[in-house]
Image (cartoon, rainbow, N blue to C red):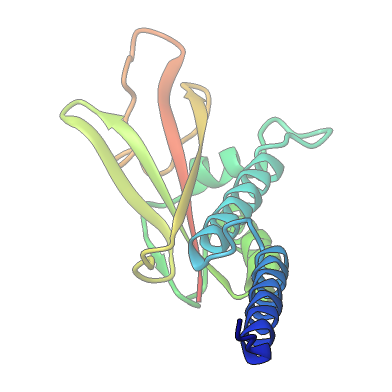
Length: 184
């Protein structure tokens, strides 16, 4: 009977190669992250972060300080003259300017741009007006909103834009304040 010692070497070499491949595959599988770390999940995280910042800013602006009748946000709506302020244009009256300054201080250093809009009920439907406008939002923009109730004793300046929806009651109108945020 003929013995070929090369055959035994080939067999041992094949087994060693197979084991080496299995070890490499196991190493690669364990080294690769199993969580979806794609641009999509990072994008969702940034959107959630923007949404939280926007809600927090509207909450802060809607807080009524001691000794005041209205929150800075409500006072800005009451004092708004119906003019859309674009970019870095001077903002008047002072309450609207205060709102713009709070938003700029909180967002500008982080490279976040915003638009502030008001949606109100009118006899013909819902109307939306830009108050602070910094351009067209990107596709990654996030919009947050907060409702502010106005009463007849609130001396609204822009009566042509924000109308009294029920003159027979104390209720004046509900304003939906929308803050749209996006990164530059």
